[in-house]
Length: 300
Image: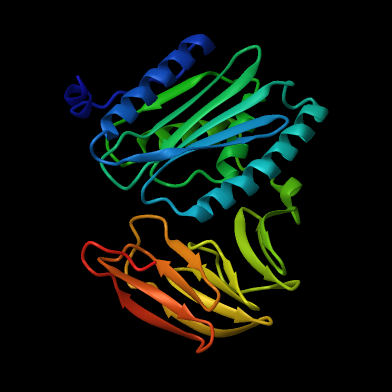
């Protein structure tokens, strides 16, 4: 049954009753998850429950933990946006249910489905590109359109036919969304002493002792040893002390699993699961060392 789905492309769009659209979305997403079995292991599902919004996304072994921080910030500012839109009458007072599947770059099945019931607005998005704030605002704006219709589009492959099909509807019915509500709106998603990771304008940034760093956050999640911070950024670990960069080291591979860090009194171990290679940072010498993990064993 799954093989027959792989060999065909099914697109369901247009006028679909809300209840039917929800069933179609659930069925299509179920096929999507089944098709991934054996090819990518779903590590789990992260949920963010807020006053007007429930956002969840599934992730795989290759996920970055900074994705958690990104979606935490996105959910917080989107919840505030929904609150305002309900007060303005642009959206009815319903619960927003957003389900995001972050599919890996494999031959999987993207899907976009939107529907609504008396109690909720329902959104399911699974695509090769990460859904961002603009896309979700456009979808929510579509719910308020007078020409709103339930939508479900499912395709096989990684061409994002589903997203592109729905984008054409959003272009016609919504156009470019007004994002002024989010101007200057910040959300702290991580803090350790003087270091903060902040979500703003649909991006994350580091702030250390009140100073914004020109360093895009990435895994591993920041750790502190003594008066120094180890920050991940674009395949590199950067060490800061008193607001100044004092050391940096490239991660020896493209991680296929979340980067693991362990902090001790005088050093930090960083394991990116790079074919039995890891990094160890010495606080006393302010230096990174390449460490080989012996067969059958692990460096503590």
